[in-house]
Length: 274
Image 1 (tube, rainbow, N blue to C red):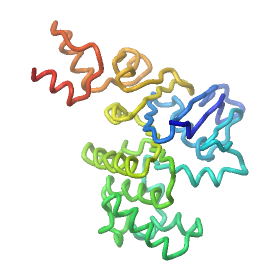
Image 2 (image 1 turned 90 degrees about the horizontal axis):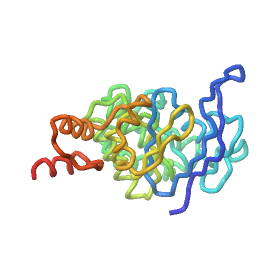
Image 3 (image 1 turned 45 degrees about the horizontal axis):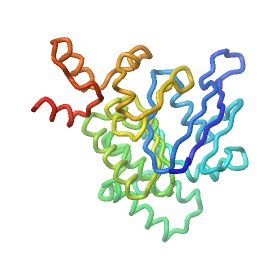
Image 4 (image 1 turned 30 degrees about the horizontal axis):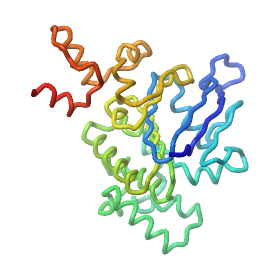
């Protein structure tokens, strides 16, 4: 797979009077069609990176290429057409009085003809199983339903990349599972690139690849199995450890030999049943 995003030597700080860099000499490549999870402690630069990626913030130095196009004042609107950003709190994205109006808002701003706009809104809401709620007020929806509508608003615009900035953090486990299942389905259907910025390591474990941020730069990069097998390293930088690794550690303390590799919950359950 070819790279759809390339970040080279990126640096950003929120104030020139602040010696602390939110992003420090960050270089990163993301492949087209990949599901990348970005994890790290609070203040590690994850959300700052997502805002830099869509031009909501401007780096002091470094370069961001999206689909081989350099992000700049001249190209930012073209790049925003390729990258859809879903925030942690969906209420921050709602502007319409109904679900249908809200999903249509971005299309109206983009000058999409009305007949095509109606088709896109219907298709996007059906993709996230929210078409029957099209006449409801967004404020009347549950947290998971609100996040699905926010995702529909992004899907209607036809992006090639979706960035989930802690998008499931405010949801209960059931709502989180529903949202992630929808993202997985649309990713596979349309070949999207997904960047999931998350504190939820179980969510990160479903990604193709994980990047670990610390103090604004990458400290680890690999498949979930390679990242999670080093549970002590995650703890040292202020992260938790997935449930499966916690259970394995508890078994080891009881002198039980366990596989020296990362196991998903399903694979660990299979091993325990042997």
